[in-house]
Length: 133
Image 1 (cartoon, rainbow, N blue to C red):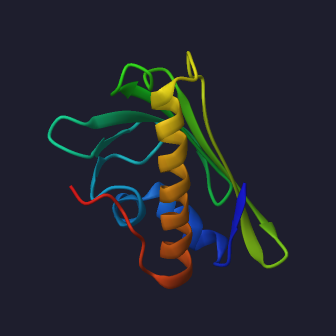
Image 2 (cartoon, rainbow, N blue to C red):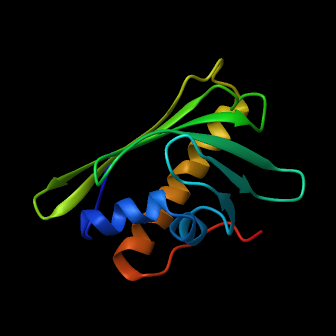
């Protein structure tokens, strides 16, 4: 959980639009962001993952299910829960359903911290630090 000092609509747009995702997670984001759609996140020619947009509630929640990517990610679920708190947006992020907590899990946990900080920077300053494909 962390807080972002920006309007909730701006945070929601950053996690639910291709343009937003390209500006904080990876410039290699593409696809359909509506429920039932698929989003591909490319990091290199070989490294990518595909998420099904499982659920979305305007300015509140977003859930993805990983259907393609590293073996450890397939079947995992990523969720963002947003709530206004004291003039800021509280973000609860989770990446659950891992089969084991190995070195890859630890590396992803570290990377998520970096990219969630990028999300905060994008929403607060207009400039994130995404992976550049």
